[in-house]
Amino acid sequence: MTQRSALMARRPLAAALFIALIAPGMAFAQTAKEKALEARVAELERQVQLLLSSQQQQQTQITTTQEQVTQVQAAQAAKPAVPAGKQPIQGTTIMTAANPGTTFSYGGFIKMDAMATDTSDGRIADGSSGRLFYVPSTIPVAGAGADGGDPYADFHAQFSRFWLSADHVTDSGDKFKGFVEMDFFGGGSNALAGNETATNTYAVTLRHAYVSWNNWLAGQTWSNFMDVAALPDAVDFVGPTDGTVFVRQAQLRYTQGPWSFSVENPQTTVTPYRTGTRFNSGDNALPDVTARWLTKGDWGHFTVAGMVRQFKLLDETDTGASVSVSGKFNLGKSDDIRYAVNAGQGIGRYLAFGVGSDVVTEADGDISALDGYGGFVAWRHVFSPKVRTNLMYSASHFDNDAAITGFGVTERTQSMHANVIYSPFPKLDLGAELIYGQRSLEDDREGDLKRLHTTVKYTF
Image 1: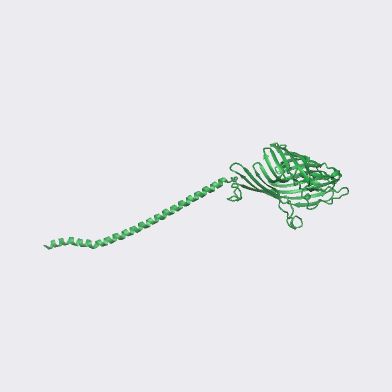
Image 2 (image 1 turned 120 degrees about the vertical axis):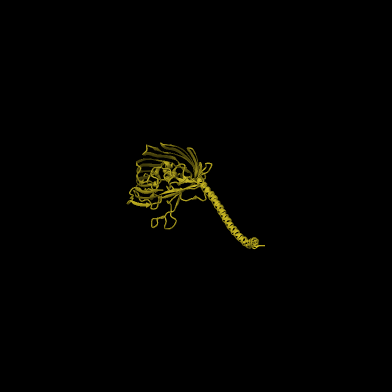
């Protein structure tokens, strides 16, 4: 074999040996790369799983949020709409114990009264109601030679009041209402209260407290025998008190269209035989029964009411019936006439804060209803949106039998009122009223009252 041939034979062998030597390295390199790739793939898979899990959590949160938004929207839709331009006080109902959808309202007024009074026959007792507003029965009557002394002044804010109302309408259209109203015309609750020495503190007193359900009403409010809508625009608490039916008491009332009927708390005021004094018996067994018919329109309103009562003192009883005709008649946009005529047997407790008695006792102990009547007329004129004035006349009369009642009982009262009320801003009233009142007894003795009554009243 030549040298060239030997060299050619060794070349494949060298190549084989070279391949054999580098093959394990190449295999090792391939294995490390694959492992690195596998690690990267595993990391990518882990990151993808994290992304998928995060996306699922976000989707769950979005779904939960959408459900909550839907619930809030449904709850808001069930609530009464907030008037345009106004914001709700809070996001949830203020009446947590009421039926869902119940609306709450609050209102009232602050009223400060200041008055100067001159009475002909002595002063009205300090602390009595007659020092706070016009009460005919408190006008002193002392007879010839009596001297009323100098005029005297009183300031107070006891007729400030507030009310709370809860109204609800069911899905079927049933209407419910709960209403409470209070003022501060009452006695004090401690030794320093209810007097003018230091604190002038007066207790909260109940005016109205009733619930109504559609046509039914139960609780304390104005008597169905009283026409509140006919009351004049007075600076005084009532104004033409002498001829006004004015009673608030517990009752059950039903109203259907123009008709309303009620059974109300009974009470009998009694004048004992020949004493001239008066007391409440509290012996009644049957309620006072009333009925009213009302018609109204752009012209005003007109109403007629009737009442039947039982009077009782111990075992003695009597009955009586009364009637009231009242209304308001509009004389154009700036004027109206308001009026009432009331008469009946045993009407005393209902008329003029009880200026007369319901019944009198006779010598043998029997009781008999006392006839009485009264009324008022008032003219209201509006000069402008800020200024208005009212003129009023009112009177009451009782048919006492002096042989039974004695001569010291009230036979008649009357009063005249003239006022001007200025409202510089809506809901703010500044008023002044001149009052002349007179009370006459059965023996013809008379006493009179002259008063300038001013007020500042803000309604909210």
